[in-house]
Length: 147
Length: 317
Image (cartoon, rainbow over all chains, first blue to last red; front, side):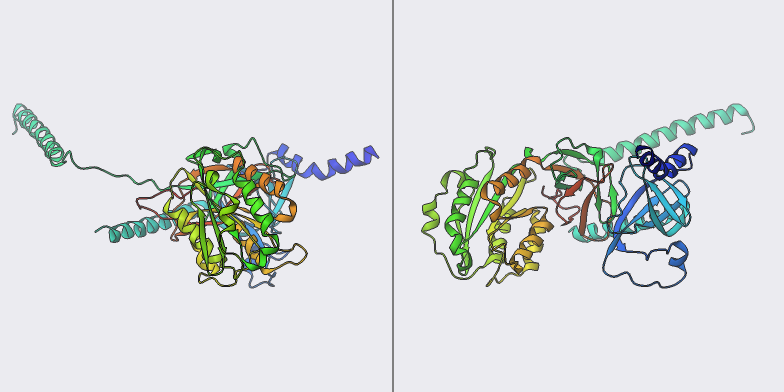
């Protein structure tokens, strides 16, 4: 019984451990999070760009913007409680059409659907543009407020 | 100019003149700066008071700065300007006592509960406690700031009771009192004893929700309604308390439990300050999430109004 239990445990934790040992994990930082529409099960990046999908109802799922060195991912949890610990750096890897994120205990991964992908340099450029616009709006507001 | 010596001379003169020109300019610049001018640099920061509980709903005692991240208008913030225990703040508490018709059968117990809360020994020496009674058409001030020494059952007994429930109007009065006394190092709180069923207010739920956000008060409600009959009042109490980061407690859980919960909360709360990211909106939604342990839960108010570049920069605790 003990042996069977150990084998099951080993089998379950194998993919995570193996991935960690092989060093396939990439590192990234979550910079944005919001509760958005859930992506229907079995649908990923391709389905998102392939046209409208069946509505999921009122449930909201967490959506994260994950920055890696070269690529920015927008990923969506499968359930409303599919959360990622918001540590400075998280480990993740591609798994079929999804992103597997390593949780803090290093033996467990959570899978997230990929909603969008963008080249990091393009994302940085967009952010700079947004920041400049915000700053200009703030400056304008301050000028209007001054007598 | 063909003579290198001439060229050297010209260069030397040009260098000296150039230096004088630059230093002259800088001197002119500094002489133009009147010593009476004062330069102001506005630092806009937000202060959030929050509570952390573990998987077993116990308060997390040893919470560190890197155990959590704030999600402010979708931006994840991990860089905090300060992190401290909130019991370092002074409390400004307004207790709202519902004395309308619908709660009269339990009124004596209610007064006894309020008295227990006020006479609790764990208040800080500089904490302020005020009591308002609400019934009929208005809220009446029973005592202001000094209720810890001046509140008596006789004072309540002498006030009118019964009639309609102007709950939202009373909450409006409470937020106005807190707004007038608002200080950066003071934590505004409203403790509401009511069944939550407003029957006559001029103010709406939307009006008071905006004012509660503006003053940044945390609301604790002691629900006096019948636990066997769920009502709209209970739902309303839960909504306003959750949005403010407070709690709704049923009086049937026992007075001792109510006060322990409230006082434990007040003593275990943490406060964090940070600079919010730029956003086009003044309304900021806010939540706190763990950075390591997903079993931990964080409770804080759900939103605030951000006022940048104003004289009063800090959001209240």
